[in-house]
Image (tube, rainbow, N blue to C red; front, side, top):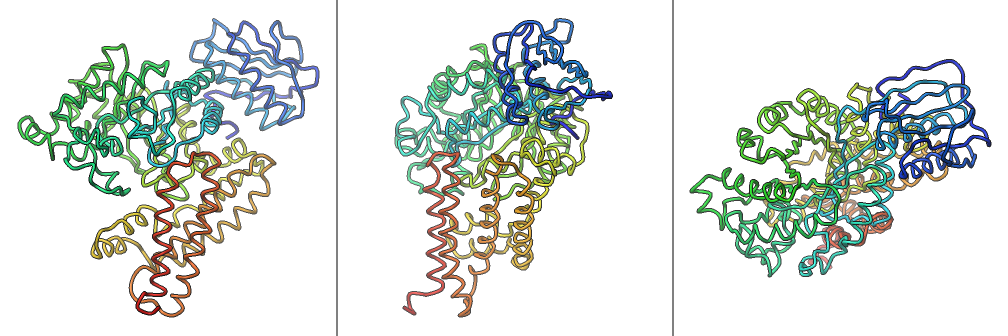
Length: 614
């Protein structure tokens, strides 16, 4: 596999085309935005060959690279022709012209100034190829890192991006919600929207409007809109925040409140789409809306509110989206929603069954299939799971006529997973949404190593993969144990941890780190940013595995000494981890993670030196 995504048709001919200092990048019959694409190509050529080639407009000569729109080509297609005399990219639309330039950039990455003669005819299998990024559960990226992500998505032909918002946008009248946060501002969102549009990425607003509204509904001002009374008096915990705080669907004031938020937020985007989320409404009908739920049924209560929100978007000329985890249980009710509605049909199992995709296709019609990068609650993503999950869901989507694929990247329990480690998972989605033809896992990883990390040996992502699946005391168990309210609950958490596997897991992580450092030697300058992130992730996995062994039962003198040492190692490791966090994310979120680390470090010291023995 040479390119990501793999083109639909490629023919290789004899010979090569040589870039020289006299080569020009010529825009012919190209829209104004094509100047950016030319500059992208020129910069890639400079990085890979040292040549500084001009971007001009006019008629291409022999030895040039022509970039042009061509009315004779389908709007959803681009064509590349490379002969010994010249290279030419033609496309039927501005977006496909941009896509074609990304393919040229990848060819330059692979072959430098001596390009093979070939022909490419290419088009996407799915119209919408999206990435869904959580920026509400702990991490809020800096604007600079968001723009770098946009450049990355553009390179691999991902044309839709959604940022998951619960409370991390600076709404004008919600100062009580964001006063202790570092939210995105209107100007930042609009700047990012413009940056994305130039790269043919549709930035789609995504806002929690039903479930997952912890921070808003736990304020004094808006607690009365929550389904469960007393939301303002419950102390924060990651566990509670993940499972509670649903809006009261029986209260019309809650609908008016959400409509106001939608109006304010939606105005920042040029797209007509709006993701209402409306998923995991765990508290629905269990509190203030109980009477109505008993009268009309819990699902009907859900459908009533979802329908109101969808119609509100449609009345404004928009296209509503929602997560389908509740709807597919009774898919026939999709017919009650506006026809414009798009169901986001998620599923994260490696062998995710096709039933839900088929049911929604038969009842709702318009859907995206939504797999995941399988990174949440992990220091190291589950790469095998992500590859298989995305492959299976993409196949289901094509089989049942899905109009898009939205690859999800969540941040449950504080978002400890570093987004830079999601790169392989994002690229599995980019490749399979464009071209459903199966590419073996190892071959896909070799291409990612070469193109995303500059590793001409193709081994780097394989070294990343070797670090997966060794988190015995994984982050969700770490949080669940420390937040448990009594000893039986803590024992129940530990009962789920396979303690006997920890020595082998940590041995494998140590070996994986050595392999990683050998593979990292092949990375060129400027591509090594991921290495310390991976090392910190592996070290964190090992430390938490060690912590688990010291949580239960009396400690021997040797274990007490280990506990004292481990407390310090944990704190020093987290200090390094926090520095890596700040490279791409704002300070928000670190404080709560610091509290978790401190509680464990203090506990280890207490277990080593109980108060009675001091």
